[in-house]
Length: 183
Image: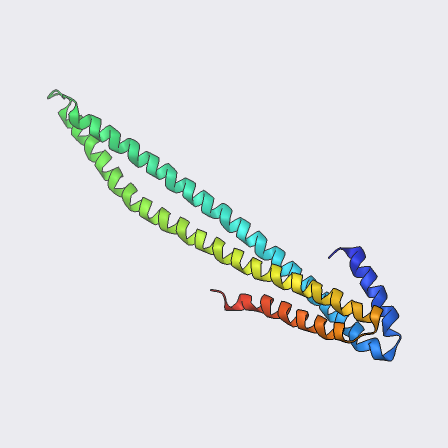
């Protein structure tokens, strides 16, 4: 909701609040406006969290890929050493290099599994943050609809719009609160 829209709604609420019968409507609109602001901030923060987690997951996958490339290069070098003809004078050095490559290969295989698990865990966190952000977005939209619907009461003096606004507001609150049910 834009600042000018909120100002216009407040003016309507103040004008309508001068009539005692419309004071509950104006109060409801004020509460809805505060809820919209809170849910908007929570939604924005949750979207930011999802983006940050996605960056972390990307970095983790890059680390995994770098280690995978090193592992592959080491395996190729070890394969080349195994097919090369080595003179007796260089045999000890070649065996030492081959053992070093084998040790690195074993370490990198373990590291690859760990890096992949970390990246997959971060991707799960991204999905969870996006699901929470979606719920906040739906809640924000419903609360904004509730605020506008309730404001129609001030224009028409028909309380059915206020009741409809209360229903939309309740739906928005429930949608936003459903974030707590997500894992």
